[in-house]
Image 1 (spheres, rainbow, N blue to C red):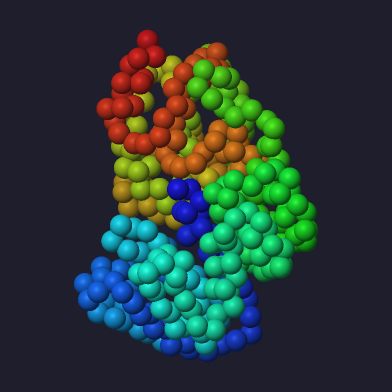
Image 2: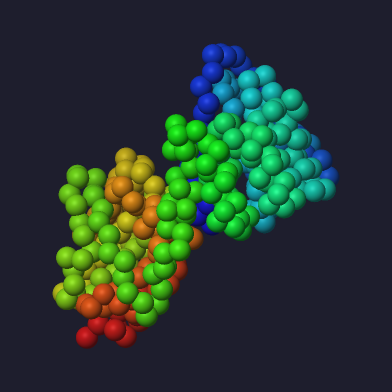
Length: 323
């Protein structure tokens, strides 16, 4: 799940000189009149028609390749890439999600060749042919784990990318950097880490030996994370010998602050954002979705690990271990 969310949050624009209005028209084929399809641009639902052949029609300023998605009623998505002057989209029920077409869009062709490659060999070939293209780099960065590449295959693709473009592969880099290192697992030992909050104050998990430690791996765009915070505040406040730390995988500090203000949430524990090996830590803790919680004993042993929110669940785990 995190790679889907990451794909949505990390959508980028490739700067070009074109400045023009593009007529965007999105049609559906085969879904019927009451198709219930939705259109997403960036991180926002667009106003679209819930019935009929035409889902969306509007003139838009598209100065660079622009990503969008079609969601069906089961929330499966089909991605597409528009380009300046290339805004005609056809989403087909037969072959969904890979059957979506954007007429004349080279960016969309590159996306399809990677996102729906028949196997690893086809993916690698398509990537090698486009390894300087930001869209190809983004697809590799956000979907490589679904492909289950061998470490040698992933390293080979990474090595062909220029030094400047390697910064567009942070998840790939973190995976390669932690290859062969043990993950943090239930009944195993904590891997200590540091992180800075938004004010630049550094916190170190090692400083909390002798207390129970609740690690909350989260993200700004994680709805269940926000839903869980009120219960977390209530339940963790019952224990003097418990420290909580939230570590956000993204870097959307301003957006996080706005959401917290809107929801009237003020967390009484550190919320971490920055560190040089941040993504390596998320790899070692095998964070594949949010919220992910680890309850650590005073001796540094992992005594609970679980996904999801829910005050009752948290309360039972704390009552079980903390005396």
